[in-house]
Length: 209
Image (cartoon, rainbow, N blue to C red; front, side):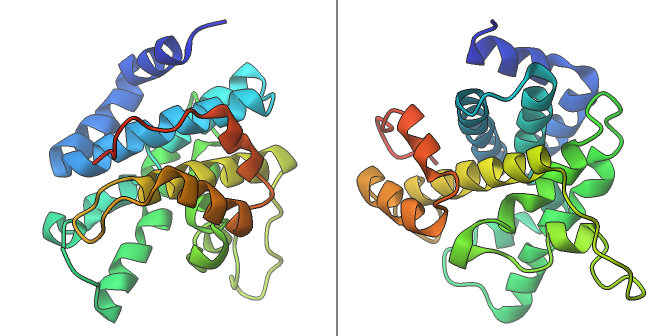
C-alpha cells in the first residue's frame, strides 16, 4: 500500500489535477495550503474507514479541490481580518457549489464533483445550506432531489470533518487557533457520525496557517 505522502504526491502530479491546484495556489496560497492539509486529513480518515482505492482517490481529489470555487472570491475578502457582512457571507458560501464545473471535467475522478460541495452541508451547526443539496437538484422545477450513494455521503461527511477540523485548529486572519483538545470535543458534538475518525490523527505540533 502506498504511504499517504506517496498517494498525495501521485495525485498532485497528475496534469489534470495539477492544473487546478496551480490555479488555486496562484489565487490564494493560504487556501491552497489549507486544501493540502484537508486532503491529508481526509486521506487518513477514509483509509481508517476502509475505503477501497478508487473511492479513496476520489475522496482525496475532492478534498484537494474542495475550495476551488474560491477562485471566484476576491483574495482580499478571503483574508479579511474581521467578521463578514451579509453580502460577503453570501459570496463566500457560493464557493462550495462553484467548484463543481471544474471538478466535473476530471474524467478519471467522476464522483469528485459530487463529493466536494458536501463539505459545508455536513458540518452540523456550521453547515452552509444549499451547497451539495443544491447540486442534487433541490428546487429544480419541483423535481425530486437526487439521493446520494451511501459511500458518497460518507465521503462528504469525511471531507466536512477534515475541513472543519483544519479550520478550527488553524490560525486565520479573523481568528486565533483553537486548542486541539477543544476542537475534538466540539466536533464530537457537531459531527458525531464521523468524529471518531479523529482518533486516527495525532495532535498538531503547532497551529497551521
